Amino acid sequence: MNNKMKAMVLDAPGGPEALQARRVDMPWPAAAGDVLVRLKVAALNPADAYFRSFGPYLDQGGPCVLGHDAAGIVEQVGKEVTRVRPGQRVCFCNGGIGGHFGTYAEFAVVPETQLSLVPDAVEDATAAALPLVFITAWESLKERAGVKAGDFVLIHAGAGGTGHIAVQVAAELGGRVATTVSSDEKIALVLELGAERPIAYRREDFVEVAREWTAEHGLDVALDNLGPQIFQKTIAAMAPYGRLVTLMGMPADDAEDTAYVNNLTIHNVMMLTPMLLGLQQRLDHQATIVARGLQLLEQGKLRLQIDSRYDFDDIAAAHERLDAGNACGKIIIDIAS
Image 1 (tube, helix red, strand yellow):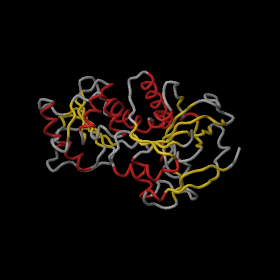
Image 2: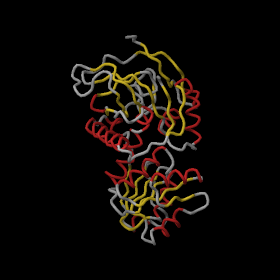
Image 3: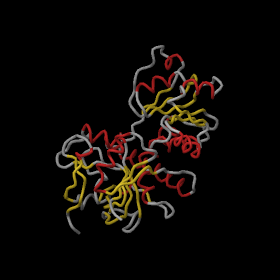
């Protein structure tokens, strides 16, 4: 096998043009429990734009290859690998924070325990776009907020990559789902995905709508993936003892200390933490979450919306679409046919 592979390399932080095609050393052979995957499709996430703009979390020298999600074919396996074999279709979330290479490349090296086998009924693009957003939604709503039947749940940006999966996860768990969206097109999408109350935030105040929708009970659960201003505003829509999850870091309480007075539980979710801190058991657990998402896809209980897809060489254009913030679903890149 050729010991070089094509990758999109980040030499220094910048705009989409900072990603440059280059031949790099293939990181194989690797550890005995690792698997070499020939990548077919990779997915973009907002974290990719963050690392491209500001630099990766880890700087261990050498080229930086971004990207967390991908699907592909097992090419070779380490001597201790027993669960997967060459030729099988797999997907995963691994890499892309600096250190070992991410998924903007022709190949990736992934520990066997972090791979999920892709069912025949699930397409490569769907499998590639699933891992990070499904892990995030499941950890946030199932494992942290504990959504249960009858809960009033608000998902912000419900037509986005994470949001449209979170709407479905909340509904699958029995929640009654409201979600903020920006257009009539996105209203139609979230209704199809199981939302009960779309909120057109450009013409409706989501706090007022939430209070009315819940008959002044307030929200039992809310998921913030927009940042401090929206987080603080959401506090006023919460029921006493509600659970508020943020993906954007922990801001302060509002000016009236409403979160404190109403005894809200605040959860901070950063699904890249296990990768950053090398928490292998957590990484392995995240792979089981991905397997659950694939099962739901296979059963027709989960839909993954693809916003757009680009050729590998057009990755800068894909990042321009990502930066614009208007995507309805996930942006993906085709690495190999």
